[in-house]
Amino acid sequence: MRRDANISSLFFDFKNAAKQGQEISSLLEKGQAETPLTTHFSTLANEIDSTPFSVILIGLTQDARSQVLAWLCRQDFNVFSIKVPGQIGLVEINLQEQGFVLEKSGGLREEFEQIEPFLQALEESKIFQSQESRNLFDPLKLSLEAPHGAKGLLISVPENLQVLEDTPALTGRLISRSNFILTAANAQYELTPQDIDTLGELTSSADVFQPIIIQPDSDASLPTNGWWTNKRAFQDIIHLPEIVIGPEQKTDIPPLLSEQDNELRQAILLMLLSRKLQDSAEMTADRQEQESKQMEIRKSNLNRKLKTIEEQVKDRDTRTDLDKVRTI
Image (cartoon, rainbow, N blue to C red; front, side, top):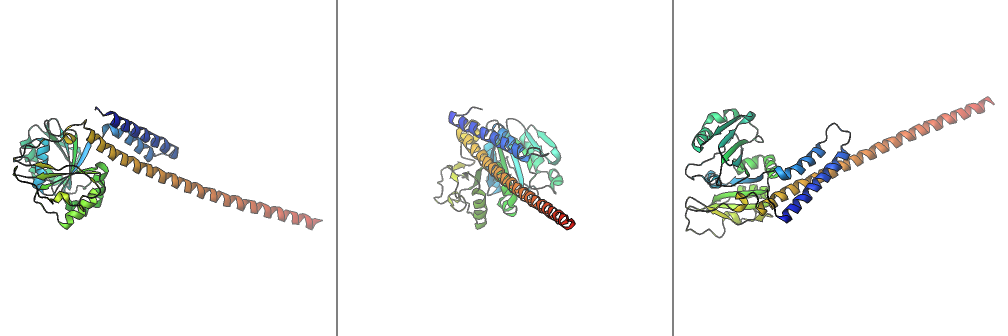
């Protein structure tokens, strides 16, 4: 992957910092059977070259979500529809050069060369019969063909905002994997108070937000105060320009989503990895503080034992001296 010189320098600094964290952690965990901190920093150092560019797609309506996925894959809006079943909660979609793959629980995979049988299989209830007890943290994984669409994207698609509100830990999982949120709805959509609260909670932990607005009429103008301008829902976050798509729109996929070498994409990824590194550094500092406290406790216990031994020795010596006096 080609990188700008400045970006390359930052990635190099990140890798060095991760390696330093690995060295410090190995000293803290020396002699231990398990070394989770050392392993974590090692994984971070390698993630910089292997982590896919992940985005969180929040479809405020099912139709908007389907249209965004169709646009990203360069598929026909009228035939392309990905539904997130209620018993699944979360779908992870990987955009690839060729073919369609449905990965079910237990690692079972079904592969399709054409989109029609893939969508038909996805619609069949028998696919999800084994998913009824599936954990929300074990997402349904799909790979979609997008040779002329977005490249190198891993898209996390929650069922809706309600599942995020009901499962705060799922929000934490999403944010740990991506700091870039795409939110989609038609231009006239109105956020509910619940939408605002849930989006505000999600975006407050992310770095970048980009609205995708569904506008069927290419000649219609966007409302001045559309849902994407709500400050409570999208606060303290970098706003990228809105993208307008629709059946009559000929909207190009922006380089951020279509080019793996895009500088903005790499900068956003670096922001995510840097946040992980900072969290890891805080974990290491906490571990070091715990080790210091344990050392102080050991030292205090040892001093008490030494003092007890010293007092016992003095007491024994005193008794010996008294015995000698009595015998004179």
